[in-house]
Image (tube, rainbow, N blue to C red; front, side):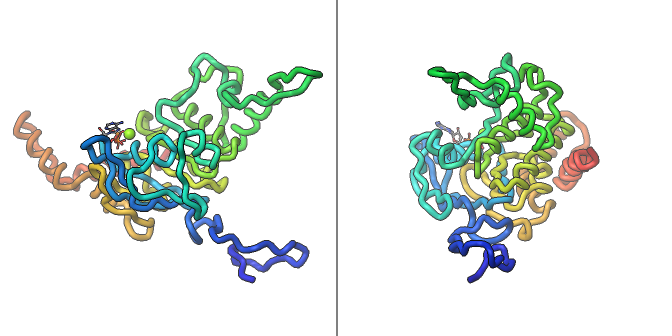
Length: 310
Ligand SMILES: Nc1ncnc2c1ncn2[C@@H]1O[C@H](COP(=O)(O)OP(=O)(O)OP(=O)(O)O)[C@@H](O)[C@H]1O
Ligand SMILES: [Mg+2]
């Protein structure tokens, strides 16, 4: 019998059938497959024939400029929108979600940029919002505060998140820490696919680095992560797969071995468009334009280097 892990099966283990879609990082069938999905809003083609996949223990990055269709794409995965064409497969089975609740029950957790947190509530209350641990006391069922505090502290620590005091209001945490709590929460409640819509876009270089580390922690816990960003320097170091969107169309769905950071940056920066913009701006204010899109890329790369040094 073949073993998806490639190792010998121990004799004392019961023989288990080989899974059709083993959740093996870097190999096997994807946990999540998206095949030629399209979405129209009236006459607006928000997405046209877009495909990609996400594997357990890997990060799939979805890149694109404003209005490219990134949020529309993940809202289909999250059960907010239904695709008009194409389909989504989870663990090899067709997934048709009628609501975000159905997607969540299937193990797809989504962290939106405007996090659904209550700023004045404590960290641990937010962690358990809508899913409070209960303790029975005779005929009553009580919210088990002690357990909630303990689990929150343990789970944050397990993700390497150092929140000084889980009683402090979530509103006092930095943007990066709030994202981190939302990621830890999704991991704890059993998500298999974690979708993050631009978690780093509102953050400074240092805080963005913090969030990237938590994305790596979720990946290392075996989740398939779908990471939306328009920054190739945030995507490339952590990504295993890159879907590039431009005005609702796919500009490619690349494995990491099929594209390097320079090419990803070039495709994202829209090389020719940047060059044209540089000339246009120079004519207006009289300043010397950057000699080329390459210079703009270099400036972006410096930003990334700064991030690497954090
Ligand atoms: N509910 C909707 N009704 C009509 N048009 C919509 C709707 N949602 C999105 N669109 C349109 O679909 C296109 C893609 O939007 P989307 O929000 O998915 O882009 P995005 O890549 O997430 O952009 P951003 O980086 O600004 O968040 C846009 O032209 C947008 O105006
Ligand atoms: Mg968006």
